[in-house]
Image 1 (cartoon, rainbow, N blue to C red):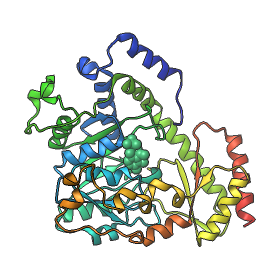
Image 2 (image 1 turned 135 degrees about the vertical axis):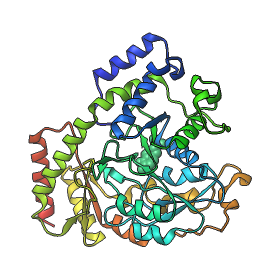
Image 3 (image 1 turned 45 degrees about the vertical axis):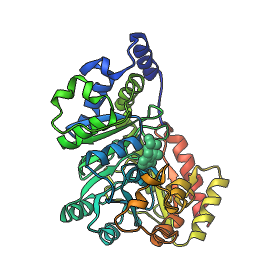
Image 4 (image 1 turned 180 degrees about the vertical axis):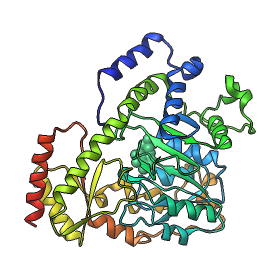
Length: 391
Ligand SMILES: Cc1ncc(COP(=O)(O)O)c(C=O)c1O
């Protein structure tokens, strides 16, 4: 969470006083319907479906695309485990591909991992950094694959002038506590594709066939579940949305000042960024020549009281720590386990993405803060300079 305040309190109060907390009671004027329209407009897609989490958005997106048993979905080796769990939830298996120095999906490795069973690629815009969408989209189109962008860590970022989540066939967002905008827990799926949208509506709400819009759905109904969001969360998100561009501006400004101030120091480079204008600016990534140099820098920065960390220590974001996946325990019941029903056995090993482990182990993260004053930023930069020049 970056910024939250009285406006969100007022919005929640308004909803509670209305005594209407269920999205489908308010029709087009519900907080949720309005948030969906506003989010779709912000991202630049025709349709948005608000759901309960980013995980729900990913699963709903894959259902929208018709992914199921026997299918393979390519995900990066560096992402929150949820990206890899989503294919399992729909009966498919995740195939894990390398990230490159940009910390995002390496198109060359994706090309190697495509098989006749591949249905979807999930590029993940990690820590607000846009993926190489030109290369990934070209690859996907060449192989007739769908692209579901995981923009859960990149609400509002862009690539080539288009908001992240609007370049592929669909985009998934998270609004959990740690994300750029938040309502505690929440998510959204966006798409321009009417079939994906209708299937998402059906899946995210088991009661879809009873709703007012049911007669407008042009795809066959099937059994869904409940990923519906409530009016309190949507009201918070509508306020958060008004803060989004301001926060992105502030974070990118800080990041640029940090880059400027640190660029004359040797011993590291800045991890390459596929679109510096579209970067969310949440994180500045420094790439050292060796893991030992990165550790020395990290220890020095932490001792100086600087908020710095390394993606190799980020536990659940590194594929080697995805225990249920590496052990191929793909469902709560063996008869539903996608690994047991895969067309071709899947093989995972802890060292299957060595390039990813190498990059993550040499990368150090510094974090921006949209609420920090220029004076505090300058003091912080001075301390960082001292540590890095003394290495
Ligand atoms: C890259 C990525 N994908 C998916 C998710 C899942 O989002 P949620 O926690 O809202 O389910 C997250 C959240 O941490 C994430 O960082």
